[in-house]
Image (cartoon, rainbow, N blue to C red; front, side, top):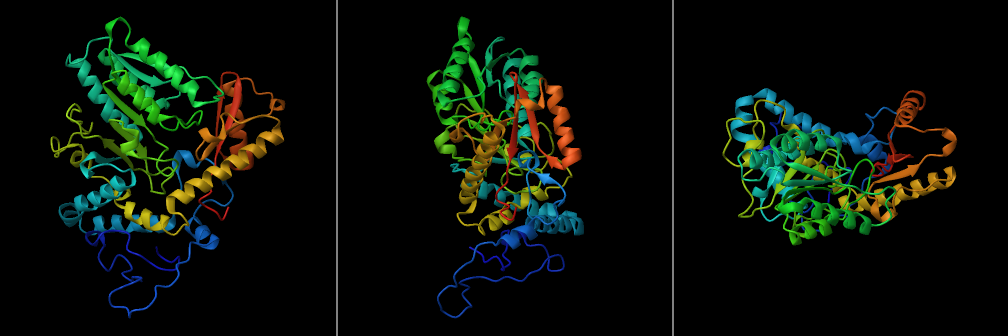
Length: 431
């Protein structure tokens, strides 16, 4: 683990930009050229160093909407800039000699982070929305090519992200699939409520001899923000004969536990630019190796079409691939924290629950779900004295807080209850 004052290599040997474009100085603990001695005690990152990493943030704005766009530390931004300059300096050399190997290195790190069996199961794409399009495109082909019967079902949670719902409409409904939304109560009080409604939706999907071809399950819903019991829902899908399971986990990596072998889904995606400190935009799409899983393709067809999704996704034409290449630099950044990413996740959760309870008590309201169903986000009911009675009112409030108090957040009007959830990034401990 590097000392906060040390500079470490954030990429494999092939990814070091040329000496004119980066500082080549390294301080290696335990280097074979160093005299034999006890290794120095390593210090964790200090509040001052954290403040320096995020000094580019507008100091006049309270950024408590980390879940939408994330926060990328300056050391990672600098690593990204070195990759960009390397490409601009000699594009041909970059493309032919370094791009694919750099992306493979990032994929290998992600494979280990999510406990996948093989790096070929991991593709890097722009974001979770792109990943959803890849999976849903395949489902649409199943209907249009008559592999599925018209009226066979795709099941999704009512809490599903808006763009995913639109993608299901664009791909599945248009191709003849029947879409079933799992209604979930609000506020939620237990996982049992989710499991019960999910089972009912699967039964509805199988009615009249139909089959459920795909289940789309969120890992952490964003509006409202709830950790979904994905392991149990995937297990139920297997028991009920659901063809395939896709977990949309846009918020998960860096926010909650992510283990492909334990979750057992066919497809799983998560953004790395939300809670994992990467610059936008980058996500991974895990595709479990299985004889029954058909080959997926990137919706942007380029020269690598037919060479497997991971290779197709690594070249979709001329563009900036630097966000996909800085995963090693992010890993170096995380090592500077006590407990690494696991320690950050725990501190985020503990702090956001503490803050949520404090606000709920002060306002005389309550949290939107039990603390154990929260990750790094929390929902708090707003006080009735604000007189909010519609979604239009909540948008006015959000605008007022943004323009008058320089506070960026997300709010939501749901089932007659105004809920505001604060996304607290306590990894920036200097705040």
